[in-house]
Structure formats: structure tokens, C-alpha cells
Length: 127
Image (cartoon, rainbow, N blue to C red):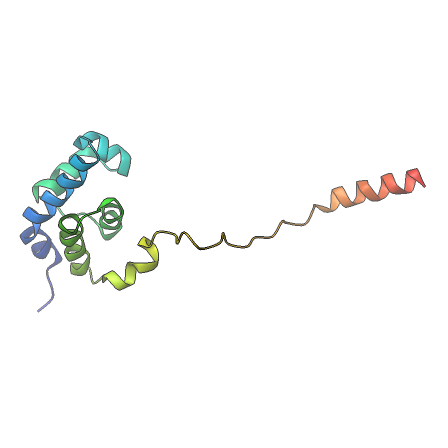
């Protein structure tokens, strides 16, 4: 028998909806403002909060980034697990940067050849 992600999410809908509402109230936003922040339709957010619809895994990850308490994270993680995504799979995606870590090394791209040619021409003219 296949695992029914819609049923699992709907069964957890009460806790899941409370988690979304908790995030919303903690950051002092209404549904429309949170929907704008997440770039979702407000109607979708309302359906997720009421348990009438289930968000995609991508949207769940977006919510998880806003969650800060176990009560907020738990239902979101359960819904992600219904998609087959485990917390360990998200560690690198959700981990905040370490304070002691140095910025990634980067290299400055080489100057375009046109600049090299013009510099060479200037040097030749000054000689």
C-alpha cells in the first residue's frame, strides 16, 4: 500500500495549521503579509493554515526556515517526512552560517583582453 501524503498532511493539519499561525503571529504578520513575504497566494496560505490543502516540499522548507520553536518545526518536519524528506537531508540547507567560519574564497576574474590590448598600446606609445 502506498503512503498517502495528502492524508498524512491533513491528519496533521491541525498541528500544521497551528504551526503556521504561530509563525505568523510571532513575526507579527497577517496572512496576506506572510503570503507576500513567502511569495505565495494568500488563498493558499489560508488553505494550509486550515488544513484544507497541503503545501509542496519547497514551500514547507520555506516555512521551516521561519520556524524557531519545536512547536513550529515539529509539524513542518512531519509534513516533510510525508514527502520522504528527513531532517538530515536538510541540514546543509537550513544550517545558519557559523560565526567562526571565514567567507568563501573567491577569485577576481581576469581582465578582458580589450583592457590588456589598450594597456599594451599605451605602454608602447609612452616608450
